[in-house]
Image (cartoon, rainbow, N blue to C red; front, side, top):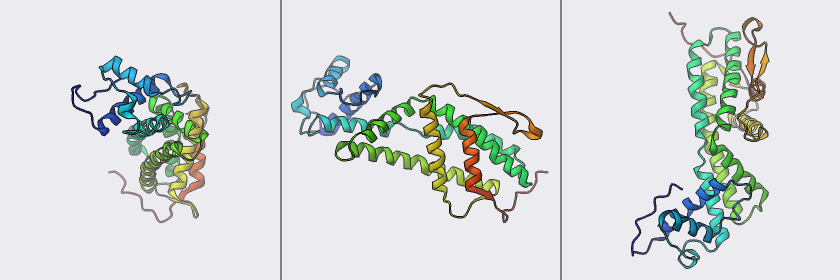
Length: 266
């Protein structure tokens, strides 16, 4: 466990210090064990023993209960919240942009066919990158585990706090994708079809990738489907998510007849 506790001495640790030490220790134990059994096995005694064995930190129930948490169940819920908040999903966004950005210089923006092909290529390539980067990260599997625990428990009490933390994380990632999709569509000369919003597209595409990734069960093997979608019927490889994302984009967006392309390169 990569915990760096405050220096051990005679002074009494503050409530904040105890909270940070125990949340980090609890999170690390859950990561080591996996989340198949939830947080039920994460007892104070187990966390205390781990801290004493690894860092020589000695704690008792009296130093924690009613001073930091009212009870063990409240502590377990806070560990799940801590885990949800620390599972940073923005790496998928960065990985996707790293691949898609260099492609923009090859797009034909001076014909309707070229712009439609550009959107198709972004769905094909971006779909594969999103799937691969997501299943490759430990953060995704941890986030999914916490999500399952939150939706299968009761929606009041400690579990509601966990659920709210997960929803807040989803909104943060959705905000990022909203901005990215907006820039892409404006630069390609597309607009939303009447009745749709960008957030609806973002939520729909996110739901697709989450469901397809979950269906793989964490496997990093990605099936590729050869289709004659390239220029003059050339065969290109697609993921199922890429195919679905392409179809989704065609339903949500249309060519903007008022859009002006950039000047052609000399």
